[in-house]
Each structure stands twice: as structure tokens, then as C-alpha cells.
Length: 380
Length: 130
Image (tube, rainbow over all chains, first blue to last red; front, side):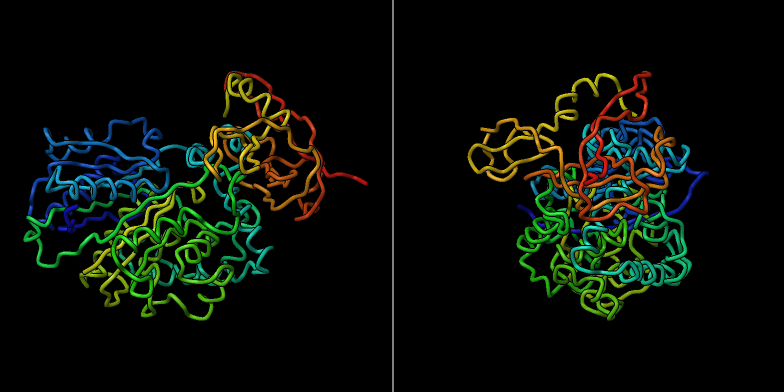
């Protein structure tokens, strides 16, 4: 396979964009990434999205591609629930690595603020098993709450220990100009926020978000497009059961573990070399399960580790300098692309929030309650 | 929100708690699959799970999905039934009285109306009173 480089990235501020449509958000991020890549024109457009049905729109690659003047290019959409963005990046990678194209633009986009929130909550739950889970009315927060109580009960972890993750993320996100929730919060704020799905409270959860991010991938042949090329050194995806009932383990994300191991192997990188990481902390419990399944902490030990200052800015790895899903926000199908854009900027040294010097970065993007996980390893 | 067709298709599984047991490695999985998730064998046989079990984890949903407003607060649990686990609603108990390790038994109850106006019945679980 050919080496693949990142020639440019683009992001729009994550938030509630009542004034912008799905195509406006995607177009803005896409054009920014193209500008960074010296206004090169991509030969293919890969779109990551989960829930454009909420705005009654499919056929996204054509819609967005035409909006930014790419008629005639190849266009497709990739879907893997909340992990759609990571999968889109992996698809774009394979199109370049295989030699089919030299220049591929990956765009993740999500537009949630259009319909009443009950419709959005129902839509997000489509990532779960419609036959055997949704028939009981369980929500996505509910499924994660089941994992959270199981974890707390098995390892004797207290609610406050998990909730402290949210405090840390708001602190990081307060410095990120692209973040949706830029206010700092206290543990007391988390513990007084309303219960959504016991034990998950509002502040244990990521917000609903609109957003779009883009990453311009190029082959070795044309890496001269950028003075600061970042290599996509490894990328791997792994699936697990959609339903929680048939999971082999409830306190470990097997797909995340497999995906991380394979992407690191592909990149010939040891986990200890990772300087910065963006992980998929949709809920505080997801942060713990992600950190442990990637291998940054032992099982049941992640909350203790972060309460002692592990993963904070400057530590190796520094995790979620963006503020993570909790503070940056979670524009579902765009999140995996934001993560890659953020880590690319960290490695280049031009991330506009908290920035730490690093040679190697990692992103981990989850679809469903751990059922579809993409890990990307990036190297300067 | 679901449909009448879906409930009809799932009637055997949802009402009889049909799981699949692998004839090669013995792994039991619910819901049933077409290949064994552990060893990959296609030699699976259907088997009804026991109707009594124990709560492994639970949640009380306060912000409902559309269509489940009348069922809120909604208690959802992962329940160990023999060699498998099942996700289902727990009824006949106050939210503050549910606990991990609680013994429960299957019961047939009404769930939220389908899009097409059907009133489906599914297996839910209630506390096993000794």
C-alpha cells in the first residue's frame, strides 16, 4: 500500500447552527481543508454521516460535492452510527493507499438541531438493536447507563470518580475555540444536574451538536502540497454485537481493543509512544471503557488514574485536549473526523486550544455502545 | 416506534425467550444469531432460556424515547437467564427498589403502541417474591 498524508484539515465550530444547513456546514469545513491543501481539487469525496434522515436528506456526497464544485468527482457516504467519521477516514485512506486516487477529501457532517429533541433521541437510538432493544423503549443513554452501573458495581468505582472526567473535559474544552461547551464546571455542577438515565446525569453526557470537519488525504506523490505533512500511519476498524445482551463482556470494549491493537501494529508504534489522543467519551463511562480497552490504563483503574492527573495536558498521552465529546461536542457522524483534524493540528503544532508537542497521535471513534470502533494512528 | 409486522416476526423470540446454543462449543447467545459469535459454527439449535434470573445491571430512564412517555420512568435491566443475558423492562417494582442481584421472573405485558395502532405484548420481568 502507498503511504497516505494529510494535506489539510478544516472544522466549523461545534454547536447549534440554526442558520446553517447540512450542506453549508459540510461545505465550510471542506473548503477550509482544500484551502490548506493549496486549493487542490479532490478526485473523490467521502462523507461520514449517521442521521441526515432527520433533515430528510440522503445522497449526501452528491449534495455536498456539487455544493463545493466537485461535479464529476467520485462521491460516496459511509455510515457506522456515531463512528461514521472514523470509518469515512478509513475509507478515504484506502482509496488513496490502494492507488485508486491521489487526492481524497473526507468530510464528516451532522445536523441534529432541526427536529424536536425527542425525535433526535429516538434517531440516535437507531445505533442500537431495533428488534431486541428499542422495542422496550431503551434510549442510547439508557444502554450506556447499563454499562456504567455494571462497571461501578464490578470495580467498586464511585459515581463521583467517573463524574470528575466531565470537569476535566470542560477545563480542556474551555480553551478550544471550536468547542460547543466552553464553560468550566465543578463536580458539584455534575452531581446536581438532572438524571437522564440513572446513573447517567445530564453532565455525564455529551451534548447534542451540529458540526462538520474535513481532512484532505493525499498520496506520497503529491505530499509537497503541505510543508508539515502528517502521515496516516495506521487505521483499523472492528465491530462487536449491536445489542448488549449477547456481548461477551460488559466491562470491556472488545472492538476498541482489537481496533487499537491492529492500528498500532500497522503503524509499527508502541502505545507508550502516543503523545496525544482523542477518544470517544460520549459519556463518562465511555471514557473509562475507552481508556482501558485501548490499554492506557488497567481494567477498572481509569477513573483513579485521571483523578491522579494522568492524561492531563502535558502527560503522555494527553487525552482529549479538545475537550472531547463532552465539551467540544459530538456532531455524531462528524466526530471521528474532528478527532483526526484535532490530532493533526496537535502534531503540526497549530491547534488553537491547549497544545502539547508530540510526534505520534491516536484517535478512537465509537459507533453504538462499542459496536463499531475505528482507531487512527497519526505520525508527524 | 415499532410496527405490527416487527412484533409478529419476533413473537417466538420475544415471548418464548428463544436463544441459540452452539452445538460445537456450547455458547448460548440471545438474541439468536446465524453463526456462533465465539467459534463461527453454523450448527446452532434453538433453546428457550429459563424464565427466572438475576439483574446484572439496570437503569431508570427519565428522559424517554418518543412513544414511551407513558412508560416513564422506565426501568430497563440486563438480566442473567441461565447461560445468556437478556435486555428487558422490569415492572411491578418502584425504581428505588431495583437492585443488582435482584431475582426476577418473566411476565407478559403490554408495551408502547406501534406506529400502525397495534398494542403489542412482550416479555417483561417482575420481582420474584419468595
